[in-house]
Image 1 (spheres, rainbow, N blue to C red):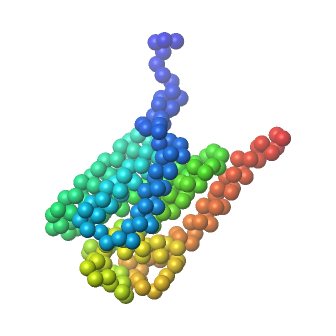
Image 2: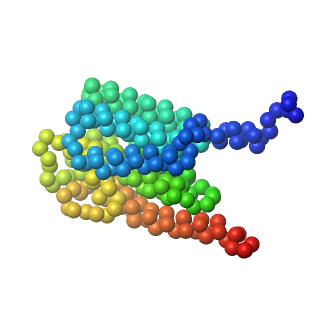
Image 3: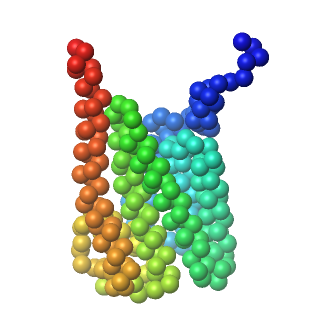
Length: 243
């Protein structure tokens, strides 16, 4: 009837409806994955000047923004992640022009916090009930890359307190040890268990973080493949029975 209030099912659908429908399907994860690949592959190649660091901070903010729109359906949580993204980018700009304000690493801590939430939401999105698709596989790959990036900024947060926590055998002249590119390289070398012997953790916290990341890097692909195959077989089994 015209004057009848909406029922619980209607209210639930309205709550779960995305704020930006353009990002719901493959397009959202495509942009998200593109930002992750851009940061993972190209950032370690270049020495970052001030403008480069600001550009990297902007790409990181856009990565968090696109990831939140692609994977988060709860509007409250989405607004929380977007607020953290804006706050994180603002903090980066403040610390860039006034480095003394970044002594406690609060700008890096905001990055780690935002990425950690996004890792959980990306995994939930990839392993949600339903048929297996390229969309879901892309989510699994995005979560894997996001784990490596989260760990790299975790190392950076540690090195802001303990600059010698990770030893690089061949320091590059004029490049700080805690530069994101070097830590991204170290993080993914640890995550994939590809060690060239040119960097290793020295501090006990750095060693614990490296061991945890190496374990995740070994177990995650196996768990991802097994879960997706199991879900695919579970989805197909009713159709096989009726046919």
